Image 1 (tube, rainbow, N blue to C red):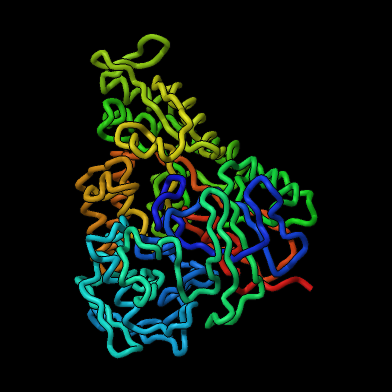
Image 2: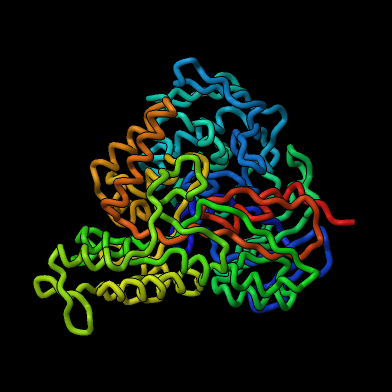
Length: 528
């Protein structure tokens, strides 16, 4: 659930790359017709490759493995563990037995001590992992011999098993380093199907297949992820043959429909675009302004015109087809209601139709990341809708380095969304205890009703209680919005049609490195 040009470790969720004959972006990187290598264009790169700082936390990391992994339909399956965990009757103890014969890519064996070290380091407050709250339920983790790991929880946490897709690192390499600054952040060693060979910042990451991988040596031997921030540039390089595949916005992916040598993959997602409305801003801090913006926005038009239909209106953080979605909160654009809300709150029409209250104009800046055409289009459409209600929104392009220090006061066209369980995405998005904690709760949202619902949903093991809590949360977000939710966006990928075994999962916000048709890269095989 990140929003920026991926700058924290967790933002990449998982990197699945190998190595190919590849030069810096701008030169030829395509692998031609070689079916054992692939070059893929992605928009972002990680700051670190260490799971201790959050990298790969949601699974699919091709450098590392977790105790568990997810299948095509997101069903949990054993990975480093032999089987799914044994869970005590009170839901407070989870016991995992490790798979036999697993080795790290440096040849050292995996043991329970590595698992304990990984989790204890992440839980250590001295480790700069901004996603530590996701493991809040963990009271203790201990080894039971070399092949068993036992987690003791503070309270029954219904989705805990899904948290153990978190990658495991080798204690023998990482223990002697500062987890925040050590060389392991850029020189990782894991048990996964691919091994890092080089990383040119801002250009590419290259990897090779791990011949000793416990799941069997991958058929795709070489992969490169070329870092190309600009959507149009990625499309151009894919068209020229410089890339074998790319993450593309729907409108650019559509330009490849007539290319018989390439195949388009679309994945449904929990990924949404929203405008953060900082409560410390003099304009967006007014609840009436936030309510009016929610009523003024035309979500369906954004889906139709910006996403070419590859998405759905977002009425909150959960997509309408999610079983946890609160039915009845769907709403259409209502400019009459938006104007009525502002009138009642004392925002009167002023010069140029922009409303004024106590001498202050209803005007604020909306930042969006440079090179992201989809977010740019959302920002401009949002500004247009807002102006119809008398609110002036100035859309401004900037790098994440510029955006980050301004998030406290300025609105941001952000992207979030986590699959698996409502707790996974909503807690870090909304809980007041995480306001301003890096890219967590970017809007600095503070609502006691929402906090109580989040705590109930996290700490209860009763599904009916949890559903009621999350339904109430979603209704409260309509009454007291801290974000204007715009669209849930499908992820679209275009790839040379040379491999078999490609599928897509229902994806979180993070994609490109971790998701897409290459989430199961180690299972690909060349077409005959």
